[in-house]
Length: 246
Image 1: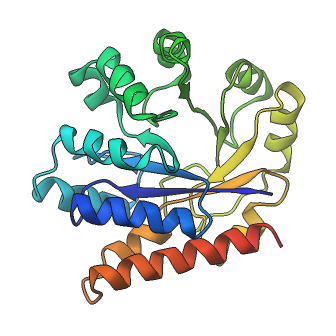
Image 2: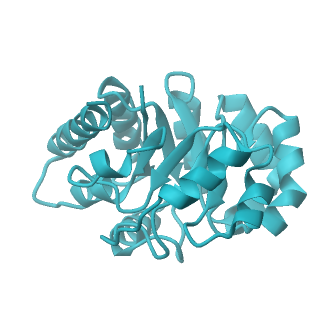
């Protein structure tokens, strides 16, 4: 069974909405939830997720809101914190680890923390039983792949193309998947540009997919009520989970 990871923006349009959406996504077949930490400059994300980040911040999102949500949902669905390094640095990695562990969060995704810099924190995070997810890009040479995936935990985040989330580029990932498999048996999940149309193709040869922009696009649709947003996002999640396992 291939896994589905769902990214959602914490706190938009409200904390209660985020919690309700998390539980609905679990029922729809989502295996792991990425609680996105709103940030003013999400460099790896496209305009859709960037807009959701800005709306959450304008709505008054505070870091305590992240932990309030994780405290409610992480015991029910496997949960990761996804955010840029700035909040981790300012609050303190030690505190992030302690609060995540308290709530049952299983790890962190920090897209702007390069492998070389992540090493400083990875052992600290893993010592507490959490995972720091490793990223591989299709442009990474084999020697770098070997270095990064050695000892990877939970799953390896394979970026589908060089660019930002939500775009429609396509690259042949066979070579990079083969390189990863040579050095690691950690599951490989493909992210960036995964939606209902692309999920089945992107899931070939890997163990799961990561979906964000396809969900957040619905989240931002002001024509929909909150109930309709949750229903529509969950329907898309259920469809993608079915497609990747056909």
